[in-house]
Amino acid sequence: MLISSLLREDPRLQACLVDDAAHLTVGSQGRAVAKVQMALLALDWLRIDQGEIRSQTYGSSTAAAVLSFKSKRGIINYNYQRTADNIVGKMTIAALDKEMAVWEKASRRLDICSCCPPGDLVSPHPSDTRFFASEVSSSTLSNVGGGTKPKQFNKTLHIYCSMSRKTEREGGFNFQPQIDFANARLKNFGMQIAVDFSSATSPDIIEFVDSIVLEDDVAIARQACENKHSGSPGVLRVMACHRGINAPPGQTFRGVTVGGVVFKTFIILNSNLTISTTPKDNNVLIHEMIHASHAKIEIHDPGLDSVFTQYVRTQSNESQPARTILNENRALELSNGYFAT
Image 1 (cartoon, one colour):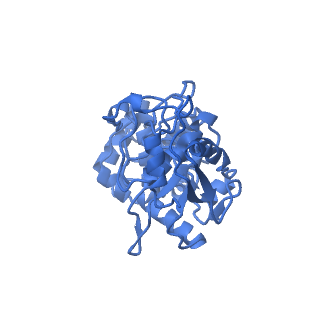
Image 2: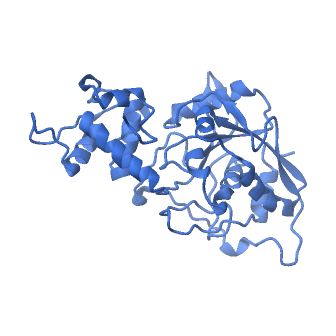
């Protein structure tokens, strides 16, 4: 039986472990293929064509990645072959699952910037990561306190908190630490977060039972959130959903459409990363709220102290930048967000 978080809940992959007829080969399609692709990206940083990833198709680049994975590990059934093939069968899915389980338990953080456009699955290789530099001097990031009282915007920022059924089954999600962190900085500018229609400690549960892997999953989860509570165009929706450990801790989505309806900008927090992170990671919500206050992708602040500093890649035993300061320009942007009153 498969044990890794990424692979274990897919019935086709479970079947692949015991049934030759369930093997994945060139031409296969669906979520099982997508999860194998994610495992290959995470474990070996192998390149897979974006078209195959978006269509969840076992094409030539996926086959090449599988062959590379198997050749590197000597996964060969010597009963009938002498070299590795490009098929995901019993031995291959077992090897992928075993390595993914170890990788997940090691809590290797691959924090990719939340501002990657929807549908862009970024390779975990450091050379492929998108880092942005701001033209704004780091001297403009002034810490609150030390004399001059900051400008008071006197605004309330409205959010609606929900979590997926899968997240609820895996222990739930408490938004309160994220909100407390944000409010401690917003109060200096006369602002606060208000949770509408739900509770930070007991968020609404949306009927989305799987992990978010690709763009279609985002739309399905957002529609499930709409089904739970419809309307409220002046409220920013924040959903805690299970994602892979190579997905970002938070991500802002714009222009997501379901049935011809374009949803307002919303946020997904990765419950697989943020549910048990350290206090300094509680800045994910306010970071994404700044993104959500913009109509387009916004360049991050320079330096290491701003809450809107680029997420960085670290191993679990490495320290994260503090990212604790909300500067006045970012507070102004939040006060002008569609969710501010």
